[in-house]
Picture 1: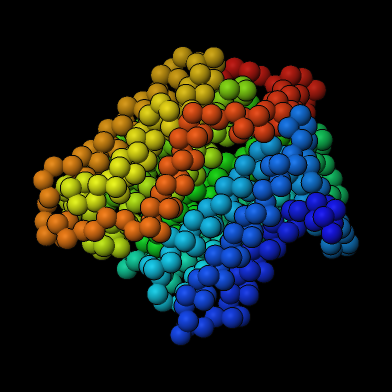
Picture 2: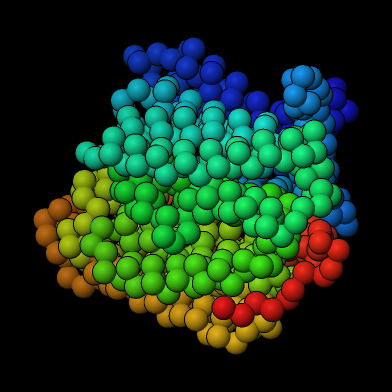
Length: 505
């Protein structure tokens, strides 16, 4: 039994939360919502526990795919159910399964309408997202990529705010166009290679012009998901309208799907195009880092401010990808995981306030630290981590990317470092107005500090933020061999010459 589990650990990681979600739906009882909550919690904890062996049994010295499994799926089109993970995928899978547990606990006393459907949506979404990180067949990947959007649409569209339908449709339209172009790229590669295996695409030689078209097709899908400037406008709307759990999953995991997919598809399949278009990608990344940070500075809605800060921080990720050095890529990976913890924590903090006052507007608060001192301590810690305070995880990834950037071009590092300045500006400005000063109004005066459930969630996230900030080695050790192998692959041109290294704008 143990051997069977080890051989099919990825399938268990994907389908166990999906099955748990279906069971929650089938056993839903509106008269006993607590029973539904406990069942969903048990399903999420077991699903998280199943993914832990991916780390404990991972061979850190191997850069290739591990835990591979599969079978022939659609024979006539050579489509396979093929799974496997490397040092880039495993941390994101663990982040996904862990975040699902947090989301289930965070909704315990908050969601009162259609509890079973809400919990089931997140469980099913978790399994489908893990499928995206695990798939080594292009069509299987595409199925998971599209399917995970359905529960996310439902979460925003049913439990969201007043303009939830508008936000959902906007999200749908943005993602649909990009995904269709990605599918076109897969179909082209299939006709050229006769295979949907991702590894076969890595070895297939293509001219520079073809690579550029393939890269741009992938870019259309992944840039929307990250999201990169200028296709970022759906994200603030989606965050504002989404319930707290939806915002947590959207920021902590969904954005990482785009970053992961650049490393899995766009860059290794079209390495010459990745080098050729690196100036374009770095320019967009720096615009996101600097311009979007300035946009965040003028936001009046706390959720919008955090949403724009997420776009700015993810600009660091794409910058780290396209400077093509070890520090940049590893820093980008640390930044993705770190942002998962910090953004989840910040949206949960906004959710704590919204549940009590029913407002996300910064002007509705003031002096919260006087009535909620424990909560304020957590919120300020996460705010400092968001602005890149040394000793927190927010500093490590950004510092590594800046060190990697300065090896390539001083001005890249100079402009990227502005996010530390602007990040501190918009974060401290929000903290000052919300938490410090005199008690602003009777609503703030009536606030009660966080309960045991809220304390438990925020304490775990605080420990993770500090642990990754002080000791990131367990994460960097896991990614090291894979990053080294990826950089080696990117250095080998499919045109028969070494790809250019000039990263000038």
